[in-house]
Length: 137
Image (cartoon, rainbow, N blue to C red; front, side):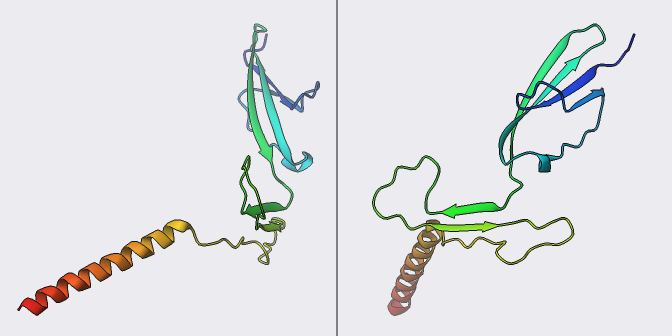
């Protein structure tokens, strides 16, 4: 009789496991064979007495070109004309890095403008209060 648990690895709702391994195991999941999108890794463990345990791990595969969109968010409620900035770029391969198009330009966040306004307001206040003290002397 075996004294180790056996692990069965399934992807999504496939009836046949992609691997049957004795525990503990180090395993490399090749996501290049999966289509982009949401998937579920199902791990079934069977101990020597026949009892089973199941763990589901949802994950998302994104092997294709990355797509970045600025100007709209998921589940947003919008109306009128909507300016969008869309960028798509591939990751290249493990041997080379594609530099062209790999950075997504973004607009300046609104909080930068708020900090700038607050700093200018403080500088004006400081200048007024300092010059008033100098006039009194």
